[in-house]
Length: 252
Ligand SMILES: NC(=O)c1ccc[n+]([C@@H]2O[C@H](COP(=O)([O-])OP(=O)(O)OC[C@H]3O[C@@H](n4cnc5c(N)ncnc54)[C@H](O)[C@@H]3O)[C@@H](O)[C@H]2O)c1
Image (cartoon, rainbow, N blue to C red; front, side):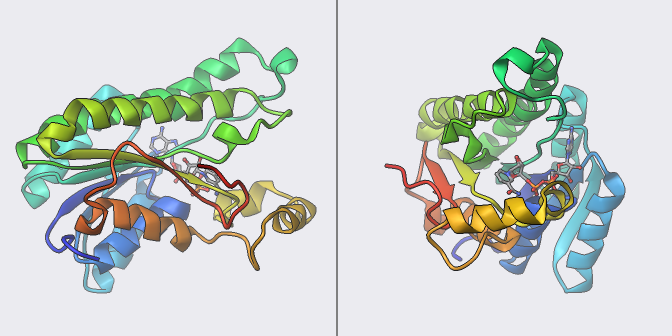
C-alpha cells in the first residue's frame, strides 16, 4: 500500500489477535510500529518477531485506560522513531457480567466504558497533537459489529462500542482540515485467540452459517483494512464506519 514506508504508528492492544496481525502487516508495508499492550510481554514478543523478519518495531507496556500511560506510549513513539503519523486504537476487554439490561450491574457498564470507550478518548487526546504536528495522519478505531447488531444478551459492550463511532466522527470533523482522518472498523466474527478461548465450537459453527461467505474472519482480514486506512491509499476516507465481516451485516 502507498505511503507507509517510514511512517510511524502505534497499535494499542497489539499484543495478540487483530492488533498483533495489524502491527505485523503495517511493518511489512514499511511502517515503524510501536506495539502497546497491558500484557507488555506479548507486545514485546510481537515487536521481536517483526524485527526478526526485518521490520521496525518496539514493544511497550500500555494501560490504555490511563492518560499517563497513553501519553507515555506517544512519547515513546516520538523519541524512538521521530514522530507519530497514525494510531490504531484497538484494545478492548472487561465484558464479564455484561448481560441483558435487567441483569447487568451498573459497575459492569462503568468498567466496559473505561476500557472500551474512555481508552479511545484518551488515545485521541494523547496522539492528535503529535499527528497534527506532522501535518496530518490517521486515527483508526476498532469497534465491533456488536455495536449495531442489537444483541439481546449483552448491553454494555455494544453501548460502549457505539460511542467510538461518535468519537471518530468528531475527530474527523474537527481535524479534517488539518489533514487528520479518523475512521472505525467494525469486525465481524474473527477467529482470534480470545474468540477461540471463549466461544464454543457450536457458536463458531452457528457464526459461520450466518455469514454469506465461505469462512469466518481471520485477524489478517481486519489488519488489511486498518492498514489501508492508515496508508495514502485511504487518503479520501474520513469519518466512516466500515463493517469488515464477510457480509454478516450488510449496512449502508
Ligand atoms: N475477534 C472478534 O471476533 C472481534 C469481533 C468484533 C470486534 N472485535 C474487536 O477487535 C479488537 C481486538 O479483538 P481481539 O479478538 O484481537 O481481542 P484480544 O483480546 O485478543 O485483543 C485485545 C488486546 O487488548 C489488550 N488490552 C486489554 N485491555 C487493555 C488495556 N487496558 N490497555 C492495553 N491493552 C489492553 C489485551 O491484552 C489484548 O492483547 C477489540 O477491540 C474487539 O472488541 C473483535
